[in-house]
Amino acid sequence: MVLRRGDSRGCFSTPKNGLASPLVLRPVAMATFSPPLVVVPRPVAVPRPVAMATMTVSEQYAALCADLSLPLNAYILGVLQATTTTYVSMNRDVTVKLTGNDRLQRVQKLSDEDVRVLSRCLRTPAGVTGLDVRYNDISDVGAGHLSDLIQEATSTLRYVDLMGNDIHTDGAEALAKSLHHNQRLLSVRLTGNKMGNTGGMCFASMLQINHTLQELDLADCDLGTQSVIAFAIVLKSNTSLHSLNISRPLLFSQQDEVAVHLSAMLRVNRTLRELHLGKMGLTDSGMERLTEGLRANHSLRYLDLRCNRVSRDGAQSLAAVLRSNGALRILDLSANRIEDDGAASLSEAIASPTCGLRALAITSNNIGSPGLLALAQAMKAGSTLTHVYIWGNHLHEPVCQAFSELMASGRLSPGHTDVSAYEADGRVRLAEVFHGLRRHYYWTPSSGADGCPATNAALALTANAP
Image 1 (spheres, helix red, strand yellow):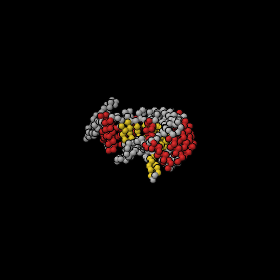
Image 2 (image 1 turned 90 degrees about the vertical axis):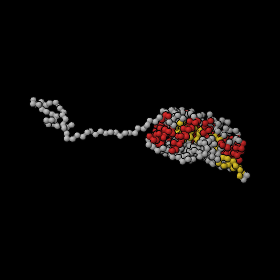
Image 3 (image 1 turned 30 degrees about the horizontal axis):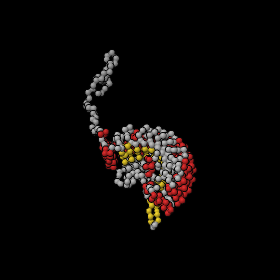
């Protein structure tokens, strides 16, 4: 319609009295008329509703990949199918194990998109309580998808292992926030993800809020001095965490600040049972500070001090704790330098009736015959020690003979030590065997069950510790 002013057929007309008449709209004929453009929407393909509740986990995975136009990961599909079979046939909780370093089969490592689909699949199924995705290509984006799963009210996860991925500060922050109100997850393992000091602070803050998590592993995560001290402060009030691993932080000082704060925490904490402080650069003075708190602590069962700078004096401080406090069950001093004097001090403490130690690892400590013979004599005297690991020291013939006799008499089980006796040219020798407290910490075995008591003795010992 066109409005014209001043036209006899137009909108305005002036009567004879000179007054303007009301506005009147009249249609004006046009030469041509184009009908209005009608936009017809293209038909959109609506996905057929899928009854996810009635589908198995593998069927859900296939359906979600189709809906999202993502390629199927054959490795994930096969594992999910096996998981469903195990749950249905055995009617017990299962762990979805999708490790990217499986040496027995070719695997396609998980990407962030794979984790996106997988996290949606695991929101509803009953029976899936563990997720093991070690050594994949999961970045901060994938960690964000997993944090959504952890926050999901229908998730049944109790254990998550993200060791050896590519998660940094943002992903760590997302995972830590997802644990603020989670009341189901018991164990989180992030070993080897370079979250740095900021990521460590996020998890320390989380422990102020979360009162369900029992195990947290942040070893090799490039934690800083600030975050390590934050963990020590938080654990003064946290009453749920049983195991903490903060090994190999990046500390800016060679002083004993960290040891002082950890000692203060051990004085008041009554729930922590495992503390892993490997590769922290602890010296004898630091051990002296740490043992001040250990004397007052009666809950810690497993103390890991491997790969530090502990020598004779530090070992003597620990020996004093063993004599006065019988709570400690496992002591790992591998790759230190306690030498003969330190080994003799520990052996004297082990022979004490007040010592409750059951496992001692002193591999690679530059110990000679005097120290190792003192240890063998302490075991013969009837101590509680059942597991001992000595490889990497000076195993001269008298030492070989003494430990051969311990194994032959049944005092030391062949599965509870890392040496095996044999005879060559009429002389007794010791050979190394692949046994230890945590031999499969960084990788899974190529044969046999993961968590074998001989190669991972700490698992069995901590499970049976009172």
